[in-house]
Image (tube, rainbow, N blue to C red; front, top):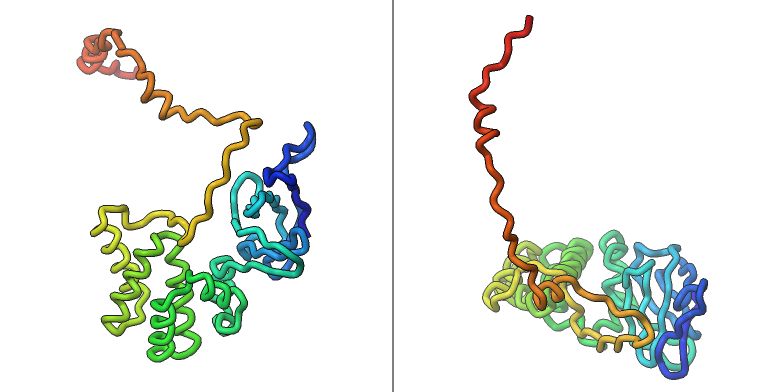
Length: 245
């Protein structure tokens, strides 16, 4: 379970001095936390580790320390659950048979993040490699979404399907080519396929000043000091080493 911090106005409350903002607790096996009677997935590598959940009016964000590890649309009612397929990929790579019947896959299909291109690639993989290896090939493609833009990976899938291959290398290469053709870096930390609206800054909290913007606004004065003289160092090059007695 996990405790939560919440205000009726939708903004996480600031805890009194000495207490932590938000809440923290341990989430258990199954890689889910329960907040306000609803369940939300977190990446499996954080099972049984201490996390903090922050609620707003429409969003739930999960942190480990100061690092955001999961973001969900806040659920209403009781007993509902929101599962992100990406949170389970490491497990599915070891147990590919669990993918087809997983609730996370069902929700990904309903949300449109698991597309017709994924379905076609999966069918091709199972046809060419068999059920288990074909599913593993698909999971490796889903892992590719963590490092490349969603649209680029989809372009790579279309190219691979057109070539009649289920090679992950072909998908990755074609995804890189799609990014380069669009004038972008081919390998990036990809944003989510459907990014959530960013939360407004809390005016009660101190704002972070970015040094880069500060330097650009007020450039440093030119250095008027003379260049260092090297004549003395040149003299050392001509000195003979004394013979040791």
